[in-house]
Image (cartoon, rainbow, N blue to C red; front, side, top):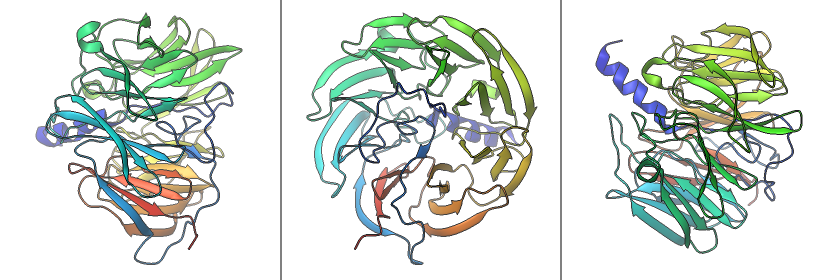
Length: 415
């Protein structure tokens, strides 16, 4: 691939850094109903427990309930207690919108100065808002960590980690969303992460000031100890959540330091993947060490993460295949591939994949290791669609860039 195309591809990795966890750890915040309060959902694994939704539609697609123009950005949406929290950038100001989930009506919006940072792509915020308790936490590409009151948008605290803590910008600026554990806001900032006190924004621990990776911290438990893994610029690092103490590091060098897709952890197994034909691997992890179980190039996640369902991995490969793919989790064997989604994204609910192509085609397919089995599809957006769609309470939310058109689709099956 010629250099200009390589540059165009790799910049996209900043869009999503994020958290995945399939372990039943039991210490995460529990959302009401089928809410989706943070990036990758309440269990941090891209999987919704929602079952009361319709996966087949008329040829024209699901009914559009409402639309909203957000401004530039790639951040996904958080849905909590009847409200949608979404972000965009207009005239070098990041904006957090609080919208009524039923109507799209603006309840409040708050903004703060932040450059667009459109380095070889359209720019705008990449980190998804995180709703926890009575607050919403955001993180800008420029290092602004902000706590808002969820009800009113009042700013409780605002810290710029780049300026105040000398946390170095990665090449495409900060992208990982906030992970809340106990009294901490954990961010992929600095060499191997940082934890802020969620009440006042003060530093609890900080691991270096080097350039970060683009993924969000992933929670898991080892024994009775709460831990996280952080996909940094050059390695996957496991830490004790409370102290930031490093447990182990797996070297993982990807071209241009683009480690962006989230790890998947279940039990004592961890799957990781990155783009530029780097590929993927499965590790057995322990309190102080790890063992590689397999490694191949069958899944190269550029920036959007996979999901794990009933022993199989589903995700968008950006390697030689450029396909939606299914891999056997235990062995790494490729089960099937399906073209047509580009640098798209997916989540899963009720055993079905909810897939958004990079050109705005929304498709529902069975999560089956025997082949791609599409149930329905529709063209719902135009432009560039790198942002993961969200299913919450019978609605699918999806957005594009650079105009930041957010659409809310009715898949409730109700008249």
